[in-house]
Image (cartoon, rainbow, N blue to C red):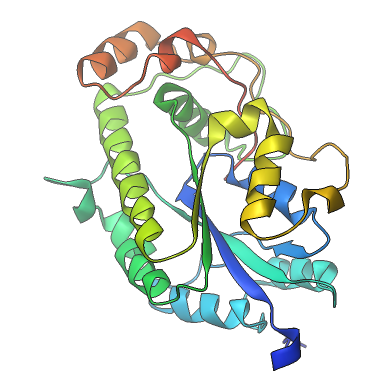
Length: 275
């Protein structure tokens, strides 16, 4: 039987979304938030849903009706749901495709993801809290993007030993411009919804501190957060230069186009699992 949870006025659950682009640490952030006893953080509920039904499925699930979700999501919700929960949300990530002409807004991938439709829907629902996770180190983001694609390892374990990739420069430029456009559009939700921006690099440096700020944003006490390590571990242990075969060529072009910040050249961070 599909799981359907109905709420009455005395048992209303508030809603939030974790939004961003793919490969930005949203899985680790969602896990960290979901550890709190009052919060349920679902996975990417609508990732594989038909484009025409994404919003309808999200609306029903946020109202406690999980019958339209995939089997794994339904089983996950059945396992984590409880009477003491006060917040229910999920992750909604958007693709950063290089397949576009003139401007990233014309990307077919973003049309299928229904980016603008989601923005309009969320603006019409100012009760939904938005947690926007942004990865600022574009070079490390590219590394994560191409290593996960080459290995088909998106979460759960490290990349194969010795794995290296060559990143086509033109594709990298297109993806980064799309990524920056998506993040800019998602940032516009600050005008209509309770909005919190989380920088991936800050979360990586001190995930407990950043998680506490997210809990405060959701009016939940960080004192209730169990002290334990997250199950999601870094997938890579080296910096971009260790994995990208055309590293110098890529850096040179991206620096000229101002698509990478100095931190992407002088620092490196491990790459937590995210989808």
